[in-house]
Length: 276
Image (cartoon, rainbow, N blue to C red; front, side):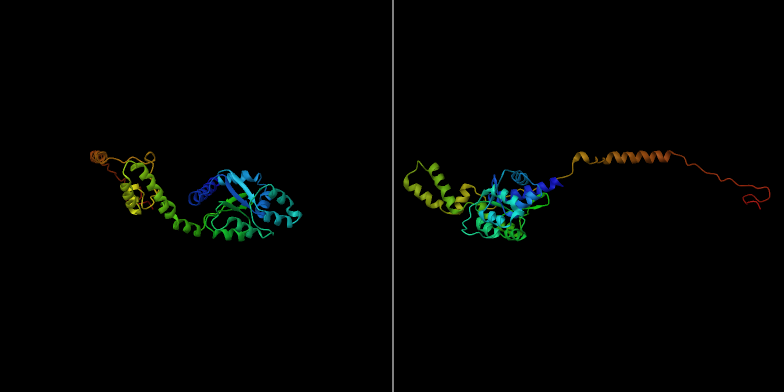
């Protein structure tokens, strides 16, 4: 069970690293509820627990607004406040304290350019960031930590932007063309270079010359056949027919055994009848 859970988490991390550019060390933005949960269930040291979850080194962040919110909760969250003050403080431009959701939303922004994982126990915050592409959510359940699976909206966003990520845009093609022209046409005259450059501006011809694929080609895993060592060997037809002929000849050579019925005779009765 633990191995399956780890595989699911690694798969989610690979999804965000491949599609949204997350890199190690992973940044985790923690709110007050998540810090309190870690202390309550003795998931310490927190950076080690999150590093095991993500499969790489993790850095824990919080904000001034979240620390101020923990201060307002009083003595019941004093240990959580001390723990939060030891984390790295992410920059938030709020002069007055705002709610944790508003503060995290401002730090994340529209596209999560800083590549933060959001760690929270608040159901509203989790629901909010399911609708934002490129924001993975971490939460705790008793003494275990989990990463939410990518939502349908996030998967659709990845599919829609897949072409842009896999194919070079026009500016990148121009840079490549300049390099090609410098390398291959350095010895030609200036007029010929200009003519070649004008012809190569067409993106379709550039793609053909540079060998860029039109569509992304992914190798899909196909179902493998059974292990030949675990299969029974097939019997040859010749051997089976020879064996059948031998069995037939042996059966014909055998003699039939006749069984004779004995007649029961009694003193006071006819043969074959029971006595009175």
